[in-house]
Image (cartoon, rainbow, N blue to C red; front, side, top):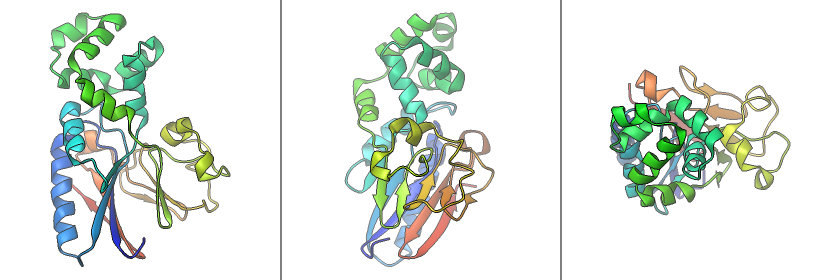
Length: 233
């Protein structure tokens, strides 16, 4: 990392506002205990779905967002935005992938959700999700590069320069990335693929520890040549 910055990257939150608040408090304490310098937080995407309070997570992250908090788009944000645009195929995947919990977190009743077909589900989303939340998700980043590290949601396509990576690979890739053993242009820090503990390899570090089910939301801290991990359990 550059000498003037300490970076914390947060893995997939998936609607666990309670764990996000816990982890942010732990990051605050960790940062305060170290030498004074600028702090930068990178959120790796998948703010929504599966957990009970996606609306609360988005609201919390919106309140933090600025020059010192960078937020990436995950595949779940992509699915939600496509659904809001009327894409029925995306809506089917969104509903299966935890979208129900997201919709309920925005105040839609279980009864209204259960009796809705896909078109009516989209109408419920449009009526209940604040436009500022939608606009925020539309503006999320796909890739952040700092020092010797690159931060993405899912991974990168090996052999393709970072500035030529396609959003669908950055948000969705697994095959061809997870098992790739050669060096990348930078150390890749990613989420998207759940592992029980941090998946630390020679060319990538996965920090999605399945927070929505496990209760463990994980962050990596980076300062100079040092790295460490902070978790909620």
